[in-house]
Image 1 (cartoon, rainbow, N blue to C red):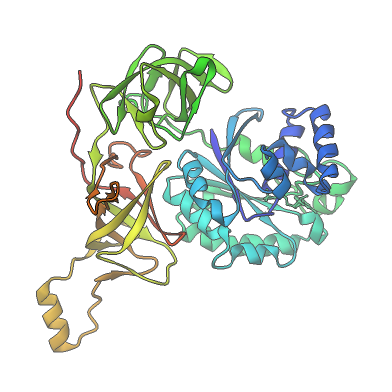
Image 2 (image 1 turned 180 degrees about the vertical axis):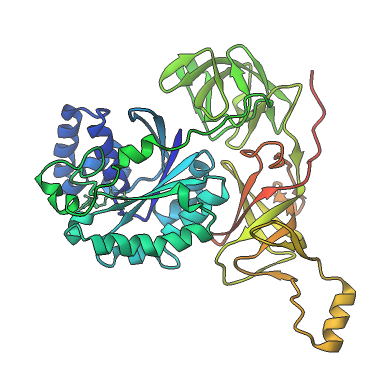
Length: 462
Ligand code: GDP
């Protein structure tokens, strides 16, 4: 399973994961001691547990997780890959690429006085993270209510936070039966794997429920579509061993095998898969849902970019510059109108785009069309009768709508000409993973949605 780890900055995500990995035997005592000493030296002793996860020196000095870090762990019944998202607001785009690979989410919230409230207010990242992961198809969420040691293991505080989050989770589309809450102290390692020890006395007085590991163990495993054609959106490109070009990402449909020829889109290039690495092991094949690194040969590195999609030459992913999508508009102040410009995020790619047409508004729950695009006659009627007809030449917060989106051109060289380069996209009906998009404007996510129309296929190379 791919578990997306999210939460407001300083909620304790890294501490929780570092401690959990230690308790589950993934970090040994020696490494932990080294981390503790190094972290003390920097005067950041309280971050020592987080060092299991936060990798680079810059992250350590700043005490924040900047990139998507991949870690894996074994609970008694599940093998879990953790996609650790940066909590810092500047890094939300990185988070999106992590969220688009996730099956379930673990949300860490800080229970200490005032902190939960800060992370949950408008502008705080807790809400945005939840909306994001749900819009990207994640349906199961575990909420770890952390730092309960700071509030004397108060049951009332735990319940207050659950009560505040529950309606919001339902509104965001999480089914109550797939939403679990668990009280923990990451720093003291309480209720992660067990709630033994005298430090946990305060918790045991009122809590008899599952530990975090129990909940992780009971997450429903995802189903993978391995019968469709291979889709491998590239989320990272680097020079691998033996100077082969390496690409990493999550397989979003089908199977990949060593020796296979793959087409790289956009473009006409064909690469050959030299090796496949899964969880630090070399494997002959891998299937949909796996996070893998592929070494490629016979390809010029300039043709493989973050956002490229690898697929079988006989069944390439469609490319598009104009398409329709069903979107849900987030909590925005300035509405979306025809002509609104934004950044379109799809897997690890972001491109300039705009809303070309607003086609219809939809019922959020059923997806039925409520109102089609306002025509000239509607406009006249509104003028004559001054009826409060709910016209929708704008999309405001909370609306669900079908819109037409067009990619905007990028300037080429010093000329004023712009070119619009098509990007690989697939309808949600064909491939759920490839059919999701996010829309951001001015550094804020304003909508999320799924692709509706069937895009044109590029010509087939044999
Ligand atoms: P992140 O930004 O969400 O990854 O947060 P960190 O894991 O870096 O933790 C932020 C701070 O909270 C650090 O100083 C941690 O030591 C502290 N912290 C994390 N978990 C707990 C906890 O359960 N109890 C207490 N008292 N402090 C904690």
